[in-house]
Length: 353
Image 1 (spheres, rainbow, N blue to C red):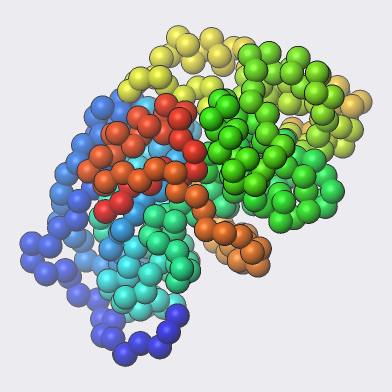
Image 2: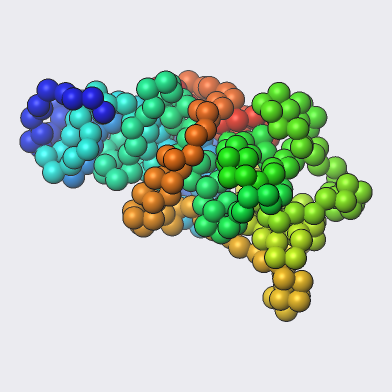
């Protein structure tokens, strides 16, 4: 960050009448209850940085939280959203590392669908000069997810073949890029030929369009894998585990098969899928020398040192800016969530303020 003139960092309440705009739900259970509202700006905590938000990244975790299918969903009213980008507008007296005018991207444990966010400096990162705000909002969650899956749990080594499901999505695309950067060989799967064409245009030639019987499809191709990244679940996950080599690792970080088709959960459908979910016998896993690992990235929120370590490692990997596949106005959050839930997205879906 360039040098800036000294600023007065004493804590002061915002000017009378200053407000922010947020998307808030009175409680989980129905996406339709998410409403746009304004509220007064609170006094900036002395340990925080105030960011005027320019873009917000959308994630499937937002949908699961709004419908009450996410274990970390807050009780009562809450503002969804896990990542954002914008400009620093004020700095608390005990905060450091950033100055008004700095372009930043950041993560938040919910609260991201807002025009102004107060955030501790540990959860902010400088936005690269050649990235726009939408690209910044598209980077933190998907990059941390892919990196943690590949390196901490997946223990990816150069030369290994990695099967990456939903490869045209935000996490999937980042995982494809990172696998290649780490010396691995990525094989992506997608749900349509259109997405496969787009991936090939981006330089990824090893792409499978998933067939209804994915297990039979993998058997026909003869492919086997050292590592699988899965956020789909169900029969796709079960077939992927069967295709692991000895010492292979299946890393699970989501269950898209439970994504509600409408604004509210279909509890009967969800229960049926839950009962039919893959189950793994540890004795069989010992015999075949294959592993299943799973994680929820939100645990990083309370482990700042680990998150900073992951971010530092990512900073050393030369990657292009993330692909923003679709941009919506901040006022069109419902349309953006519908589009994300439809499964038609390629790259990241972002709200722009």
